[in-house]
Image 1 (cartoon, rainbow over the protein chains, first blue to last red):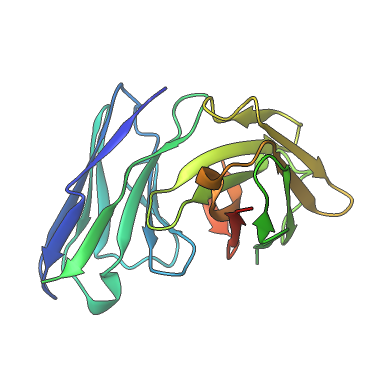
Image 2 (image 1 turned 30 degrees about the vertical axis):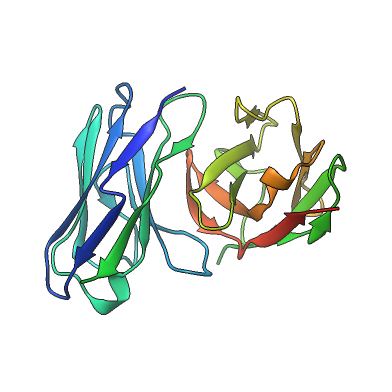
Length: 107
Length: 118
């Protein structure tokens, strides 16, 4: 199975900060990676697919990059609505796996 | 607009079988490249993919749970059913169904919390 490792597990930041979250795959997944945002008590919401494609309706301050085994999700200027937990998900292999999540907290 | 909603018991006893139904609208499981997946999330923990089924009945399961899982679809009712046998307290979680675009999830149900306790 492909393992997905996110770092950091928790991140403290302020409104307006540039934030970067990393997701590493245990083997190459090409660019078959998605990112989700989840707020407490809510279902996850798709942000990015195919490593860097922005889902319709998602603000442009969110961006994704990477290929192979290392990927990043960047929020260019953190907004109050962005404090949440973020998950990566690989869909290259026969099985789907999620990362362990990164919680973005208010500093 | 795609919507999905999970339904089923909120409380099950250890060793029982859990049956959850995902009822959806806004798409058809008769359409090519369309699928539905199930994902769960124990309280305070990360997302865990469980199973998925495509329009052509191709179904896949998490390797760690495959002996306990089954997924089926009823296209006439716009439903997907997940069963998980031999429930244990560690299976306590919010269970989500979601629409598959290729193999990522672009629309999610609200989730249903299932507690396993005697």
